[in-house]
Amino acid sequence: EEKLEENGNEPMQFPVVIPEDSFQKEEDHIEGFSAEVFWITHAGNNELERRLLLRPTSETAIYPMFKLWMRSHQDLPLRMHQTCNVYRYETKATRPLYRGREFLWNEGHTAHVNYDDAEAEVKAAIEAYRSVYDRLGLSYIMMKRPEFDKFAGADYSVAFDTWNPDGKVNQIGTVHQLGYNFAKAFGLYYEDANGEQSLATNTCYGMGFGRTLAATIAHHGDDHGLVLPPVVAPRQVVIVPIMFKGKEEAALDYAKEIYDIIKAAGIRVELDDDNRFNPGDKYYTWEMYGVPVRIEVGPREAQNKKATLVRRDTFEKVQVDESELVEKIKELFVTIFESLRDKDKAKLDSLIADAYDLDQLKTYMDARMIVRVNWCGDPDCAFNLKEIVSGEIRGTRWDVEEKPTDSCILCHEEAKYVAYVSRTY
Image 1: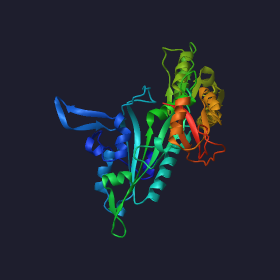
Image 2: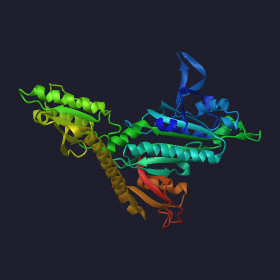
Image 3: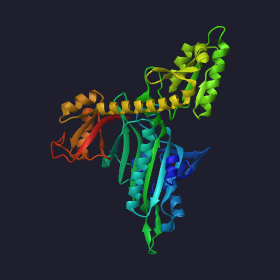
Image 4: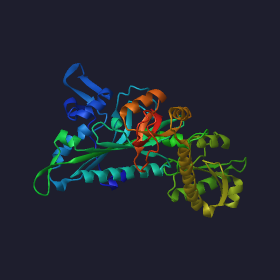
């Protein structure tokens, strides 16, 4: 939200319920979402004269307001965003965080004087999303979706796909160039600098919080539990006093002392002084919660004004003087993040393979890989490929130009694209 607002997006909230006639204004949009809509047909015991629906996305709720707000070219661009729940009747099996019928996301919507301005907005939105995923240490591939898989009503769609341990890709965010399609449907005209009526262009973009959280958990976690990047960890440091009989007070007093030092430095810190559990139990619990740094202090540390720091990601230990404590913790935060990021990038790179025939493709798909193939661009080849290998053509790279080196993997006609094939939710 902060990044979007830096770019000029105003925070707003729009209704969750949309009238059917408003939803039907953009033909491709209603066709793309009709099977996923939850319809409201009754209010109490009364049947409604016109059906309402729970928003699957909010274009058709927002653009009637855009029409009221934009009169002149000086009113543009219009930029807004909202964090809200959306509802989609998913016919596939649901799965927590990955695929639900109600999920929390942030969606952005904009209107512009021309297509070039909207193109600049697409790039800005992509960079905003990249900044979030990069801060989380997540690796991803930016895909331009094929025509048959773009957002309903868009000119084109760019998606962030990332790996998952089960071999399926996880789409964590999308950015859409809507062109003039929604503007035509909703009459989004403005008076240009020459006093003439011109049609606006639109973009929209969405980030699913559940899928982003799922990626963070799946990419960085281990058999002990969560491993959280320090920037998003609710508790960045936990202090566990080591109590020895007769010396409890010394350890606890010193733990409180360093707690105050760390807290004063603006670090999110927790002091676990619960005497019902022994230190080993506490270690297990905080490791499961993914706290990046654990500090162990006992009577010896209290006497020598030192502290033992333990990294959650590697369990490496280091002892530091109290005077260096805050500086060392901040250094560890950077080291932990860089380690998680680099490990994640290496994992994604290791999962990408090239296939030049169907046997290779099947082998790689069974090995839970993301596979590059040469593709002619024909949707029929994509659909047939899905039937054969149970994998989908996700698209072509948005950020890197890749040229085909062979014929289409399926029909053997001239290939026009290098496409990525994977299984998905």
